[in-house]
Each structure stands twice: as structure tokens, then as C-alpha cells.
Image (tube, rainbow, N blue to C red; front, side, top):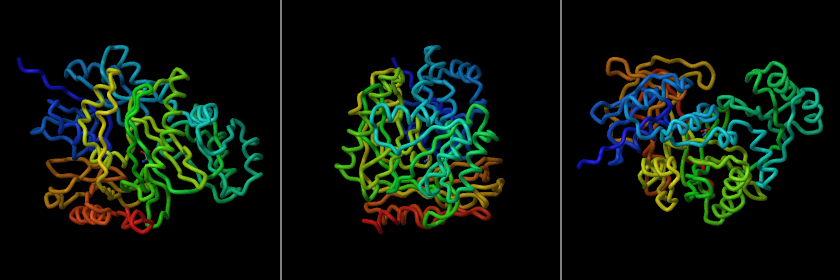
Length: 430
Ligand code: GLY
């Protein structure tokens, strides 16, 4: 008898999802991969990879697609469906899905909830205060130098909810915008004011199932649009791994003081975690502290993470979805990777779309990851702010950097932009 191979559904449309698709479709366990809605670089009929267009907020339509296409496992990319409870709904129907429950996703869905959890369980993080009234928030902030504070909207804000103010006026306007004008919605009008902390930032990832956790993978991403970390924040325009400051001592400290206490705290709060846990950490002079939790794969970190993962992604996700995870099955390599993202003119503000992307055929030997792209009549066009990127690999970080920029230079579209300094601090600060 031939064992039927598995059909997979991946939800999302960015580079993160393209990287997940590339990795999972390399597994011998896969027959068909569907991506909803996907992007211009993902579908490939010869490899049985298809884009499908279903509204991600329409859970009934997604569930009916899963049963029609005999999907064996769904993997959720973006945070919104997780925070909205897609995992609970699928599990109630007996469907396999990879990601945390609605309760556990609060770790990203509410910064206030996450802060209270850290405070209760002594997980190191910056001191913070919660506000619902703008006057009280403004009075509190007046006691500090504006450069010593961070303002955070409580709920999801599409990556735009964290503010690093420079002046009192900026603080007052931000507080007013969130609490009074409700720019992030009426259900997202609370605010957290945190002490600003300093040090290198690192995104750490672990596959988690209850109190079982894999080893950590560490990736640094670049949030600012311009070289030397100038200009506005973006969703992330580059990444590298391993970080130059990463060592066994730091890793053990993060596991003992942050990772294990976090998963234990979630268990104790009836929010047992199942999925990939992404912890944003700042390594301060007094030790690592949590700056944010995310309940999903990072973007652009996943573009690198999938090259660092030597194990079968399908097996890991399926085992976790069925609650029989063996953490020893997760093996991360320690090779050098650099990822550079090309962006559209104007991003992260208003940007252009619909520009023809050329040179892709000359870059076939590179690990190209599409983000905001669209395929029309076999041609690829820009269709987002973060457009396309290349993962470079090397026996040293220098080589990994060179490799990704070599690939990037083969690709072009009108008014494209990319940072020229991705990964360089890993060499300079060594
Ligand atoms: N790397 C930023 C994010 O995924 O939220």
C-alpha cells in the first residue's frame, strides 16, 4: 500500500510564507502545498504549489477549503488570525493546525497582558506603567526625559504601535492619538509607557509545545530603512545570523531567565503555548530583557531561520499540532547567513507598486525570497513595500554578506532600494 503524502495549507503572503513554503515543500512527506493568498514567487504547478485566494478572516471558508482539498496541516503565518482564535476554531473541528491558541496568542495580542505576565513571574523586562486616560499618561511621562521612554499601543498595530519619542510634544501627541483619537481602533486605546533600555537586539526562536521546548535560534534583524539605523522603522529590511555577541553563556541565561519561565508562566495562566515562540530581546549591561513577544514566525527572520533549520519542518509542525513534540528533532545549524531585502520607492511611507522586476532568470542559483510581488502573464511585478530579497550563505559572515549582495545586484526594478550595510556590524563589532 502507498502511504498518501500530505497536503499543506500555509496562511499569509509575505517573505516569511515564501521561506516556509520553500522549506516545507522540500520534505518527502508533502504532496500539495497551498498558500493563501501567497505572492508572485510562490506558486509552481510543477512542484504542486498553488496560491489560493480566501479572505483570512473568513474562517468558515478556510475550513471548507481544508476539507475539500484534504489538507492535513495548516500553518499560520500572520498574527491576526492567531489572536482572533483560528487555532481554537480549527482544533474544535478536529483539524491539524500549527500555532498557539487564542489565549496563548495574547502574548503578542496584548502588550499589557504580556507585561503583567512578565511582572508576575519575574521575567526580566523594562519597568512599565499602563494607562487608559491621556491626562494620567501625560502627567506620568512629564517626570522623565522623553528619550528615556517608549510608548506602546496595547494591541496589534501592524508593526506601527511602538514609539520612541524625542520631545514632550511628541509624547503628548502620541498619547492623544492612541487614547483619544483611537488611531488603532476603539478596542486598542490603552497604552503602556516603558523605560527605554539599551543594548544590541536579537530575535530568538524556539519551537514549543506546552513545557517542551527546542533549542534556541538567534537572528538579528534591521528595522530602520536607511544605513546606520537611520530613518523610520520598517517591518524589517535585512537580517543575519549568528549574532556576533551570541554565545553559550548568553543562550543559557536567556533559556533560564526568559524562555523557560515564559512557557511555565503561560501554562500556569491557562494559556499553554504550542507553536513557534518568538522573543524580542535586548541584551543590556545588566543582562537580557524582553522587549516583545510574538506568537508566530518573524519576517524577515524566517527567511534565515528556514536555512538554519536542518530538520523536517513538516514533521516538527505536525508533531506539535498533535501534541507529541520531540524537541530533539529540532536541529539548527550554526552556518553564517545574511538576508537583504529590496524595497519599493517611498517605503515605509506610501510606495509605488506595479513595477516590472527583471533579472530573476540570472539569479536562479540564489535563494530568492519574494515578499510583495505579483505574477501577471508569467512576468513578476512589485506589489508591496518590502518586495524581494536574497539569503546569502558563507563559511564566514563576510562571505554570506557578499553572497546575498551578489544575488541582489542581479535583480532590478524601477526606483528599488536596499540597505548596503546588512550584516556589517557582525564583522565590525567582533
Ligand atoms: N521582524 C519583525 C517581526 O516579524 O515582527
